[in-house]
Length: 168
Image 1: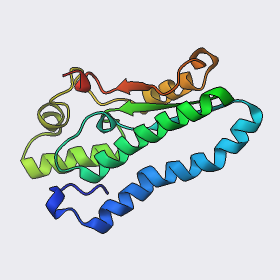
Image 2 (image 1 turned 180 degrees about the vertical axis):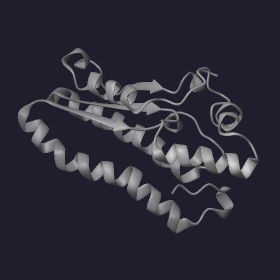
Image 3 (image 1 turned 90 degrees about the vertical axis):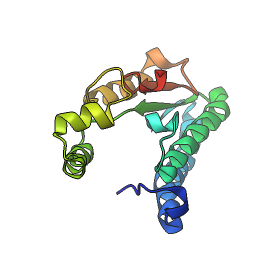
Image 4 (image 1 turned 135 degrees about the horizontal axis):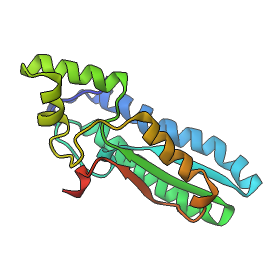
């Protein structure tokens, strides 16, 4: 579970744990995979970031810091891997219809005394131009594109699937 609290109240051990999970783990996985990709002269790295990798939200310091770090890591890999046939990109979804998000909607509805539809419209998707949750298959299609021959010239980039939130 992601901790949501002001920076001055955020538990340091929780902050470190989130960074290990969301930033250090992708680094270690990439570090292990890159030599094999370099040997083949081909590879595709697609990091699942977030709209929060591009924009910040109050009370989400560890999550935002980890996603911003992942963005930077992905760009470094794009620069280092380009001459060796490896691309590195990020997919930046907004809220995706997953069991975790659906629980968040229910919890927010209970806490705020709103309907689930109102939580989506007034809280979670308030800044989004497209007022719906993203379907996981839409994220999968973006990843598939980045791994396809059509994306061979795409590296160090983002595919932003946030319904226009980052445009505002």
